[in-house]
Image (cartoon, rainbow, N blue to C red; front, top):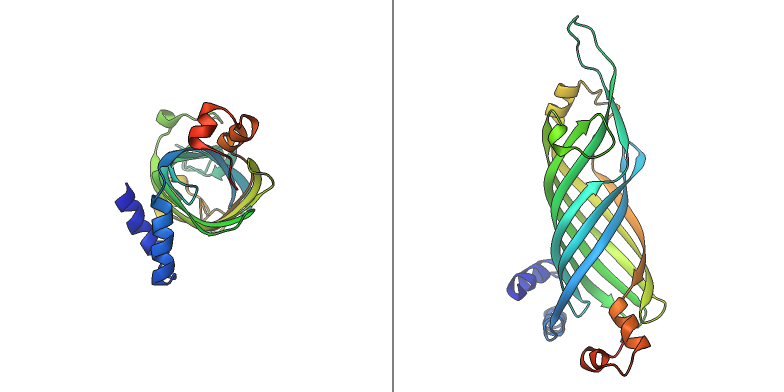
Length: 235
């Protein structure tokens, strides 16, 4: 895992000098890794409408400098699309379906600037999954007539401000590049391509309330055995 992380950091940090790179790599890996588990919610745009994408993440963190892991994401918003299938009489019907998608992803978040309260990092996500259309709002993966391939790549930047050692605020801005069967989708659903651009390239953003429960524990129980072993709380 550490060798893979080192290769990825090297690619992302090509702009750094050799001395900076050596110092950063040494600092990241001189501490033991810890579990990185979190829920994630971000906002994006589909046909100029704001939608919410939710995800679950599980990975490892190296001294809050580097996080690597994977997870699953899915469209949380109920988003309708109208399409016009040809009926048995050769005429177009008007039918509405809910857009759904889900994908497995790999994420990496590397901190390149850090002070006592401020932190800037480069988060990157890559995912593979499917999108489909269904009649009801509740997810029904096996009830869809057709599923379409979906690949996503989302580079971005995150700013974080620590109010106290255990709580902070954050903002994330990224850009979503997507690859999918656009031609096949439009042919199957007879969608007007001038009106609908399903999961087109677009910016994403999120605002976060950050709570570090380990740091909170160290603050509340400074004399506990756990705090003496793993603490104390740090900026």
